[in-house]
Image 1 (cartoon, rainbow, N blue to C red):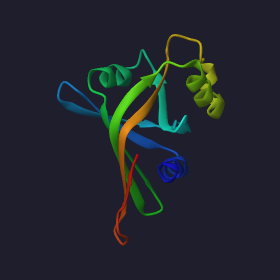
Image 2: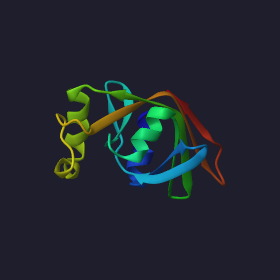
Image 3: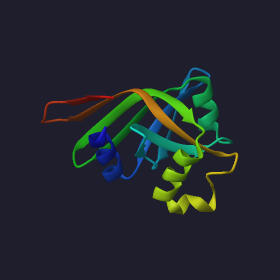
Length: 130
């Protein structure tokens, strides 16, 4: 999981894919942290992405850096704990203008059954399950 976190942080931006009306929806994201032995992302409850995850929590992330790419899939589960929200926002203070750990909008979600594959055109795939 640490290797997945490192890759995504170094990439800076990753792309999160969800499904709505049986059609893929992809958008850029940047929040990624490990908390309480889980890999977390953050979003707002009012956003379409959160509504899509509520309906179908199977997602995939993709990012590219230095000639390698990662694909991370799994289920996203909501963690309502203030501590988890605070951890994410403390690591992304620029989000505090829009989010707070005690507002009703901030959502942090963690991966269940995470499966990551780091690939390139020249090296063998690295597979990480968590």
